[in-house]
Amino acid sequence: EQLPVELHKVRIVQKLFLKPIDERYAAIEKGGYNTFLLNTKDIFLDMLTDSGTNAMSDNQVASMLQADDAYAGSQSFYRMEAAAREVFGKQYVLPVHQGRAAENIISQVFIKKGQVIPMNYHFTTTKEHMELNGGKVLEIYTDEALKIKSDEPFKGNIDIDKLKAVFAEHGSDGVAFVRMEASTNLIGGQPFSMQNLRDVRAVCDENKSMLVLDASLIGENAYMIKQREEEYRNADVKDILNEMCSYAELVYFSSRKVSSTRGGAIVVNDEELYLKMRDLLVLFEGFLTYGGMSVREIEAMAVGLLETCDDTVISQSPSFVKYTVDSLDAAGIPVVTPAGALGCHIDAKGFLPHIPQRDYPAGALASALYIISGCRGMERGTISSVRNENGDDILADVELLRLAFPRRVFTLSQTMFVIDRVKWLYENRELVGGLEWVDEPPLLRFFLGKLKPK
Ligand code: F0G
Image (cartoon, rainbow, N blue to C red; front, side, top):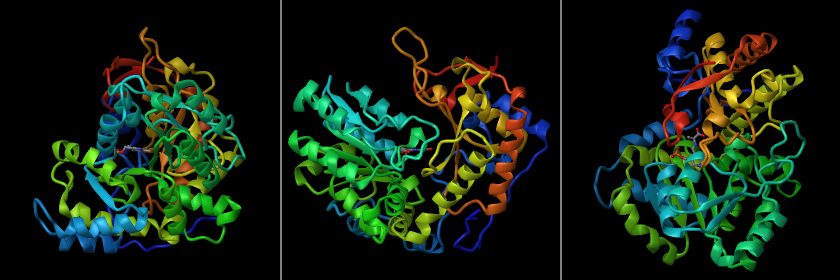
């Protein structure tokens, strides 16, 4: 067995709370069996997300002290712009307050009503923004993508034949653009290969269509290309990442994920594309040199973007995810394999076969794991889905509990604690029942909705 090792030392720490089980039970009841509604004072290991929770480096924290407060023309912005140009290889850098703000602007500018947007897989906020602007999301993943147990190294690939069929059916004018998400978040953080990205580019060229890359988890996708795609075995993550971006006209990202801080950006090389977005940026986000971020965050983002390209830094989260996935898999617990980026994804349908999907097994599993361990994961299943025109739930393709590994946050013993508790819950899985809604918001219901045991 290969144990992961922390390639950093801990110099600032934060106290955790491992409360008695009845207090956790009361907390989840108060939070409507929704882990988003818990207070971290009731949480032991917070594995909800990596968004804004990756550990900061000494250099990032130091950089925040030299921040230049200015409404316009801040030197902090120019430092971040230089880092973004270097990392993504694009000249125009449009800062935004977080990833979904980029999605708002891109959707408003590039989607006409009735157009389709083919992609490897959707993300929750991405889909809402696209649909608000009259677009329709088409997921054209490969046959392997949704299989829980698989050896396929690139389950995030687009199916090229399906992509060609989309253009044949809708024509170039009917397609707003093609979107690739680096490490498809909702289906287990699965990467795509460079070869697949090149093939997607070729289809875009044939059809004169734009390729948009969601780079929120690009560092990990690049790292897995290095590990899994022969041609890149000896390449630097930085060069892989740069090459990935070279195939897309437009790259956007949530900096809360990619660079360990806050904010985000849209980067392009084409001046015409830049000008189409520029004025909306000022309207929604703030001036061009801060985009809704504080200058301190912009400084830390600049340093974080460069650190994302460091093979040592970027290897950390995937190696802890892999250890967790492989340990649970070896114990016969259904998890998404191979291990991907971001977190360990437990298959709730396989874990809780006695709970029908309409009773939200992934949400039930998230609540149960919190109650028995104090570990908070995130439901990534039907609660995170939407209802159709008739008001019926659209059952999610996969019903997952995501245990996120923010970069360089958890130690190996904490990881072992989580593995041990998941094993205990699996042995006692008949204790867990389904959930039903008490209060269901109409938009992005998984964030603020409340449920109860059915
Ligand atoms: N795109 C992807 C692939 C993401 O994973 C996220 C956020 C966004 C866009 C939106 O960025 O949150 O900065 O507005 N993912 C977080 C998560 C929320 O927990 O997986 P944002």
